[in-house]
Length: 227
Image 1 (cartoon, rainbow, N blue to C red):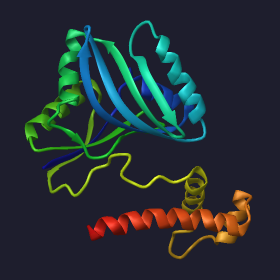
Image 2: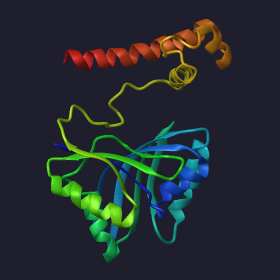
Image 3: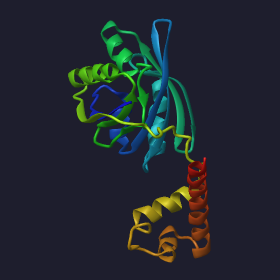
Image 4: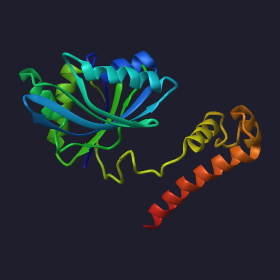
């Protein structure tokens, strides 16, 4: 397989604008697209990270009433995760872009990451080198594409969003806090009892959230290795 990493800046992308506005990060996985009544329909799933996620979703919902440009046809969310279908009119000059970036010969190795600075981070792979070269060519011409790497290598896995076990909000927040303050560093920078105080929870409650989250993730990973 051919694996390619790059970043692009699309000044017209509505997701980029909302990510920058609300200072969050978006992990966006394009699934497919189809054409109906002279319109493109794009299907995707995403995960939001950041404090302003509710504001992001509120802004996104306003696109349901958009008169021009990209419009929301369906938006369903559960916590940080959402599925979405958007649409926009078909313009002749855009057909080449859509055909290249949604080429079925290309697979997303990881979700697209929309960073707070407006750049999108892509990691894709394909059996066909030409498909990726075509995308790179258009990306450089239209989206200021910056190529990080392009090489032939074996693919061991790729990042569907549902691949890891689901954590509760309390378990996820406990792990985030532990990572942020260096609990998993070597040597450790903080103890569980200090993290519990930061989280304003009892030691036993906070420890339970961390241990249960660790158990879910490790059980999944070790089980995958056994298979």
